[in-house]
Length: 125
Image (cartoon, rainbow, N blue to C red; front, side):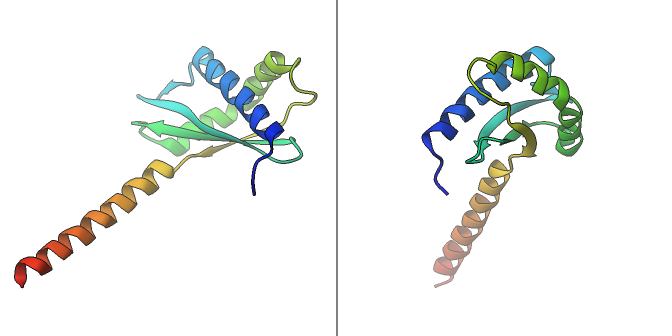
């Protein structure tokens, strides 16, 4: 489904403010790695915000995600204070692990395997 203009605007505001909040609360550097906001998706009714987090060199992404979810009330409170003049109501925040980098690595590995198999079959001929 295509995102509407208002959805994109709300997502951009939330993403910008969430980056600042993560820096302030010390959530950007956790467990020896970095956590960044990969994207924010808003439902058409603007009541739910899905925040996708990217983890770099984090030992246990699931544990780190749980830690962030535990702080979600504090995050939402600060976010509400920051965007109160821009939004009528604050969307419900949901955090997810963004696995697109893992997916890209897997696809690249498959392409490398295919390429090496093709090269080996050409060498045998």
